[in-house]
Length: 222
Image (cartoon, rainbow, N blue to C red; front, top):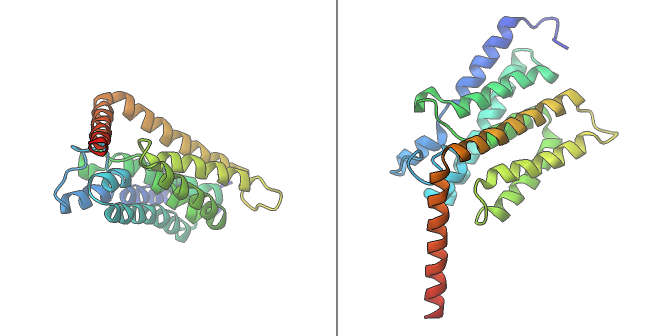
């Protein structure tokens, strides 16, 4: 339910601020500082995973942290403006939209998993922290085997989050759980669409990975 003191203008302003925060091109900027254009290498997306693979793990961790801060900041700013509960889903969605389509990078971006995690952390800190921990562990375990480990980590994290949220002693509104889950599904569909639209990127990556594995195997045998 909308708070009595909250007007449509408040929602619009919170959404605009959240979109602007989400649109900050962190991965693109870090890539440029290190001499690469993230939209021309790897997955061609401006996300922590691409920086992790194409620049360094250290820079990937930095991008992850800042992208999470973007989401947290969007929610905290909305809270300061008076939004609470399910109302916080509005700036959360806006921050993700900004991460997807940054005007600074000609409306290109990344998946938005980390930004969603950050925003969720601002909404339900303890429960999301536990899910986030599970997601980080998952992403670390699969980052050498699967494309977009942050996406798979996000899926596992959400499963943990949903499980904990529906426990009898949970104080999280079901509508918030459904809303965050819906945004997670939207991110997954966004990623699937990108993969289908740019199959050649990932085909090239797979060929390069197989060639590298073959080279390593041959070196070991020789």
